[in-house]
Length: 124
Image (cartoon, rainbow, N blue to C red; front, side, top):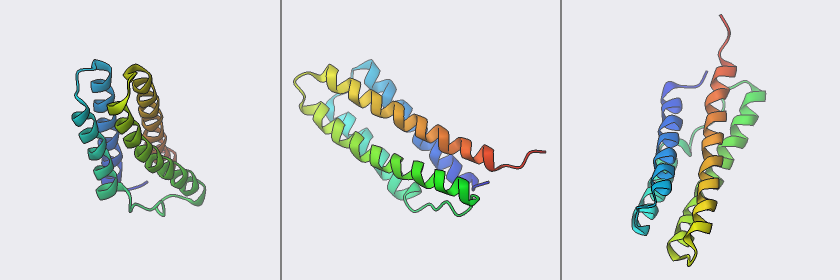
């Protein structure tokens, strides 16, 4: 089982992703606010999650964790690029869909990482 603080950090990331997704669906944010929310996600990643290791998992789960962890980082960087393009887009609905799809992927990756902890917890 990995530390509660790491679990809490993934939960915080997931909550911020869901907040951005909700704001995106409402459609009443200005572009500066979208960019700020994207930067906040990257900052959370860099300060709380980037240096995490999967050495608390058995080898099979560690490989899954590392793969998901890497994908989350990649998707967060791409999300920020998408948000910049959204701000400059002439057809924002097309780009909003791409951002929404990316947010869905990120939420799924967070869920999978959080579920790895349940797989690692011995049954009573």
